[in-house]
View 1 (tube, rainbow, N blue to C red):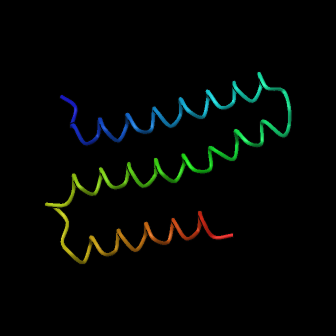
View 2 (view 1 turned 180 degrees about the vertical axis):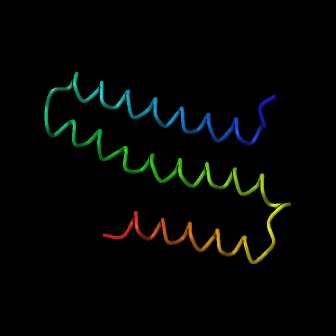
View 3 (view 1 turned 90 degrees about the horizontal axis):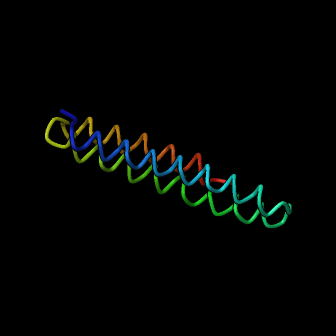
Length: 88
């Protein structure tokens, strides 16, 4: 039987992939660089949101198994990822 936490995380990733594929199809249908760039730019918001949501679900599932020090290390790693993604 599938773990509910793993199922939720995988579902978010499948939804993210579906959004990416739909965006690519929309870009092809629009066939204009400026409009395709707008579609691509909107994907820049989806990726980090899916990352945060998936990681949050995973951490909630592990919350009872992680010590506070390990939880802080995981949080620091996520913070580093977000800084790397969002910093210009």
